[in-house]
Length: 85
Image (cartoon, rainbow, N blue to C red; front, side, top):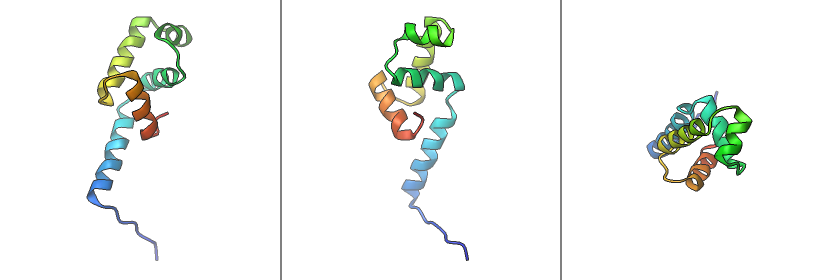
């Protein structure tokens, strides 16, 4: 007989929300996020990924919006909590 796990609705919704937030990030957004977490500047990220600084800034703005945070420090914190980085 298989063991079953039961979760409260609140815990289940929280898990689903975290999974949904992870899945909405593009591969490139995740690349930028990982480099931001390493402390790289937009200029350094643009050189490493061979994209323009404006493109890096656009990815950063999308990340802030998608993870619903107001600054880079909170972005890194939330991404860590969600297991993205």
